[in-house]
Length: 199
Image (cartoon, rainbow, N blue to C red):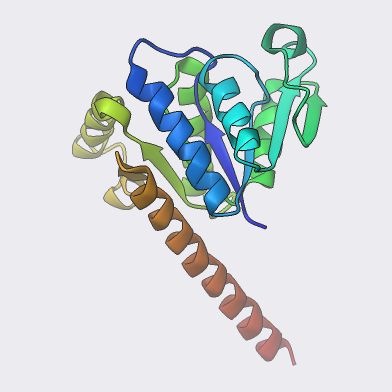
C-alpha cells in the first residue's frame, strides 16, 4: 500500500476553498487506497484532513513531538501515532514513511517542511515525487520567488521543476502517482543492472 505525506496548516485560513480542497483530497486519497502520513495534529486543516480520511475509511499515520503533543492534541482515531523528540526527527520519519508528498496551504511550518523535502530531493537524499496543490492561487507568489531564484542564477531549471504544481487535486495526484511508478521502474532497472554486472 502506497503512502502520501501531506504538509498543511494547523489553522483553517480565511478562505473556504482551503477546507473544501482538504475534504476533496481526503476523498481522493481514500479512493486511491493511499495511506495518509501527516504531522498528527487535530487542529485546523491538519485535523480536518485526518478526520476526513478516517471518515472515508482510510488509514492515517500521525507523527508529532513530545513538545507539541499537548498543544496539537493528536486524534485518538489515528491508526499509528509516533511521538518523537525533535522537529527534525518528525520531518525525517514523515519523509521516510511517505512515497510521495503533497503541499497544501499553511504557514511557516508548512513552508519549511515543503522546502526541506524539495531540497532533499534536489541533493539526492531520496527520489520521491512532490506536488503543490495551488488552491485559490495560494502558492503563486512562492513560485514567482522561485522563478526569481532561477533567473538570478541561484537555482537550475531542473531543480525548479522538481515539484508539480496544480490546482486540480485529481490531476496533481495522477501526476505524482505516474512519476512514482516511473521512479520505481528506474530503480528496479538499476538494481537489475547492478546485479547482472556483479555476477
